[in-house]
Amino acid sequence: FVSLKKTMEGQARQAILDLMKTGDPEACLVSLGAFLDAHPDEMEPLTLPCARALASREPPAAAPAARLLHRLLDRDPDRKDLLYMRGRLRELSGDPAGALADLGRLTALEPRDPELHFLKARNYLKLGRVQEAGAALDACEALLVAPSPQAVRSVQDLRGEIGDARAP
Image (cartoon, rainbow, N blue to C red; front, side):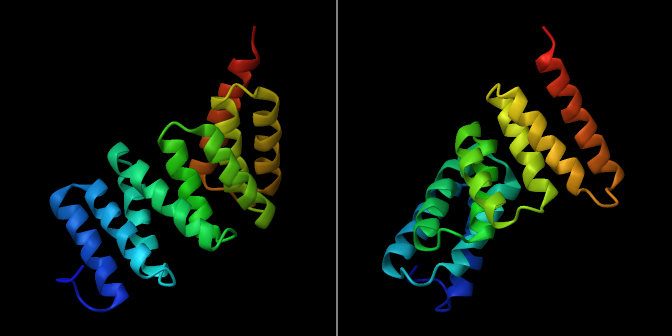
């Protein structure tokens, strides 16, 4: 990070630019991990590259981003944005049990967020835990207020998948 701007925000922006330019999320996030080692109290700008990795939905970016998020959560275990990002990254990486762990903690902090219950339902279903998936989707639907057509379709689609999983 010697050649990067001296501000934390500048370093995070540079890492994101490097990630976009080189297409090497592993190297970018490893560098950010080293930065975290050197500056353990300066974690805020590191959430941006993690969010970028989540938005890219590229499997190579998910594993190092999840490792970095784990380290950040060690410092602030109830940080909602970090829990959400790591849960989503774990889901995208094929780790529904890990996603559920983060989503469960997050739901305890934000019990009235229908999206969290929806994500839990989807991950329960991936684990074959059909009853729990149905209960989480019920909770999601009970909390929806004036849902968008997209949200209604997503809930209906997941309800259908749960019904299919229940069928003999």
